[in-house]
Length: 169
Image 1 (cartoon, one colour):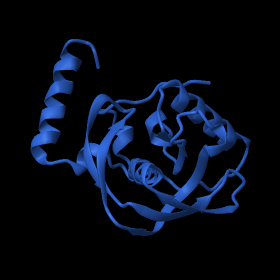
Image 2 (spheres, rainbow, N blue to C red):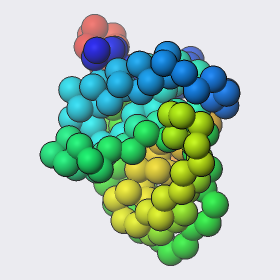
Image 3 (spheres, rainbow, N blue to C red):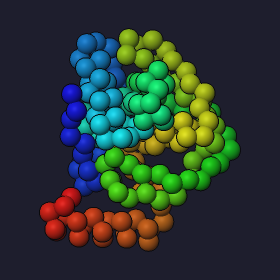
Image 4 (cartoon, rainbow, N blue to C red):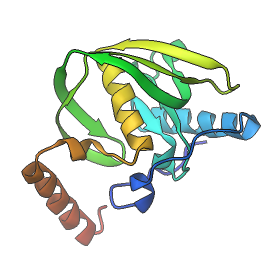
């Protein structure tokens, strides 16, 4: 089921999420809804806080659904190691129609749990590394705009205020 995605301004986006401790059918349903919502919005990643659920759960698919075997669902993800730097355009489903250059690690190792509670580990590079960073930021209450200069953040917030005033946010 496609569910609404919270936008910048929603307090849930700024909370540090709780670890997943119950690996059950409800968690699987949340993950299915997240994947459908992510694909429905043509996104490459979604974190549970973006749909108002305060748990450390993220879904990622850099192929935007073209190769569903590449879909990653990970609970309690942690970056174990990272190396190198990459800079590139980054956007967010919670801040639609805005993107900016953000610097992220080029490579990383991420570990966490799958939906059954079993340990999983991913070696990520390039766009997948960027996705992991972005989604892990979300479960820590951090948005991509927090990585921008104060000036760029202010410009984006001012544009969003105008959109909100016009009833378009």
